[in-house]
Length: 451
Image (cartoon, rainbow, N blue to C red; front, side, top):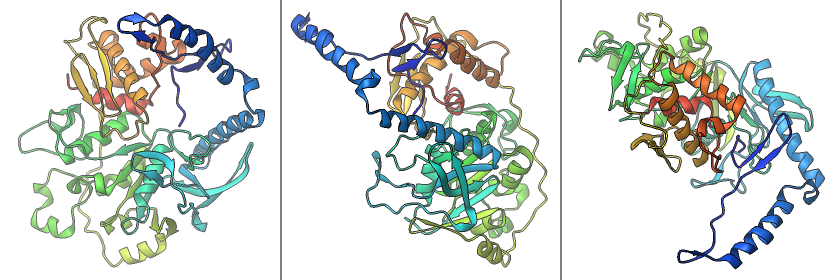
């Protein structure tokens, strides 16, 4: 995967290359071993530079291939908008990974082949004609038996917001770069989020137009995640039934007969999914293994059969017609209010606020831990570390004013665009080990800051 990193930066105006690395000095106890350090500084380091930073050290054809792949990937991203696609999966892609702890492609895996009805052809600048499955904007339902590749496809789409390097197997799996994986997240902190689109009047009298809790339930957390993704300007929701709150996704007819709609504050996602696309322009790709009610709502139904996708839309619609949904009176949703302002009275001076990443799972700032375990599209711990410094900059420079969360995030990215990561880091030098996350992950981090 490729994303902006402090380890290697090129000045767009001057072409100047800045390469950063960290080396621990060899030592005997508390004394630097000068002879070994001399080898590092005058033999090993110059050798690394000669082998990695000079064009003559590389095969020109391989360098050209890396550049061509990046051009072709950007071309496909541009084509998604032109062809009204949410995602593209090239024929021949290898979607399964080697294991749960490896991002390498699985050897001997079934290569992806698009259903003929969904096949799209693109003329790439370098690779020429490429064919694959185009997922149209709207509502796409992915179904199939267990272990047939539903979640594998969704995982590939999640990672498709980033470009992949050659040999990854998913080089031409390209997803709308605003797409967000939505899931339930029991116990997360929610602050003044307008979840009234999905959650109505609560028995405890809590205001769902400015809902706050330190311990969200499955349904309220998923509702908050969805509204916050809208605030982050996501145009595609990626959802897996397995990681969703059941009562948020669906209420079957029998349950509605026993527990009347008037007694249930939750408007399930199935009742809003069409409106999200028709009114707000947000597409949904939903993986479902047990709930057929979404057949009524889906524009496309894709069945994964032993890792081979089959377009079963016509069959699904025919079968769904025999099981009509009970339609209640649904009040159209108002656009959620995005007027939240981040305010932290406890922020200290720059020197006192310490930032520490805990892998991809969390970042600690000012002795407060931001839980990022379920922000599933974070690709690297370097992004997590950068989230900590972005949050630190907000606390010191942008909190407590009148700027909304959207305005705050826009300011952050404008600063990085104009002045680089150095402006956000604020130290005398920029260390290695930082990578810029997407705007959507910055929103997710700010939203999970409990203070």
